[in-house]
Length: 329
Image 1 (cartoon, one colour):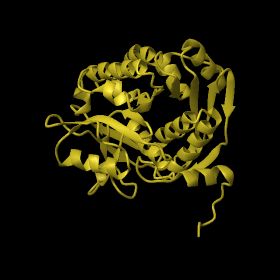
Image 2 (cartoon, one colour):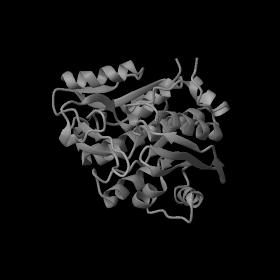
Image 3 (cartoon, helix red, strand yellow):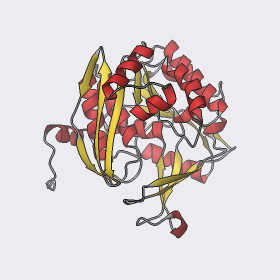
Image 4 (spheres, helix red, strand yellow):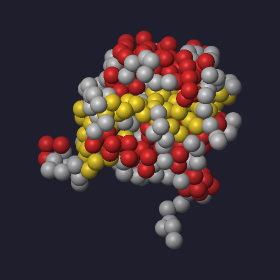
């Protein structure tokens, strides 16, 4: 059987008031599931890859609801650690419109994954069947024990010879830039692929440059283990219309791809979809394909409600070949 991509992180229930209402106005909420690493696993499955999500989930109706969504998306749940303790994290998403930006309110303190500790996950057995490992800076930001568990996972992946990708994904509401640097500087030294924004590279890894390409080069020079550095680029002249693209640096060369003008239905999970497309191409040993597919699938994700990229490989191929807005009949 084809080996699988392994992702490790927390997923939460997402609650959104309808019709652009503010949270203070809410009388009902739409429920969805999302989490950075899980979102990437879902997008990889949509592109035809096998993926498993490793996490710790509370065994109650909310935890089972979450796991049902994961299975519905085709992601393997074999490596979920079920517990009768702790809780499922929540986050509340308030959709905005210019000049009011969208905003997120977290309610995740004391979540099941925040209480994960080294020794809980059988990483050696998991990585024996893996072709890739992906994690973000959100997971170690949840707690000291989660950071230590992430360190254990990265060491096990490296020992098994499994390629590692890390998305910096800095969250100021979870930890300081000093805490982030302490852990992520060490973690990035074990990765072959780094995904970031120019802003996160500066805040977390203290890397600056005159432009995006210079930042990518400096990251590769600072962390010589990195084979690919990808930087996503977003311009947002309005809340609901953005320009979206990315660059990649590999083997001393800058790779570029198309820029998409995206009309945003829901931008959450777009960066995670980019990670999936990039990994998809890199598994085929093709940096340009990874960049092209990453930007294309994430561009489409902007048009889809929820965190998951309900996209097919044929839709990505069609967009890459001939982008057009006629009705598909």
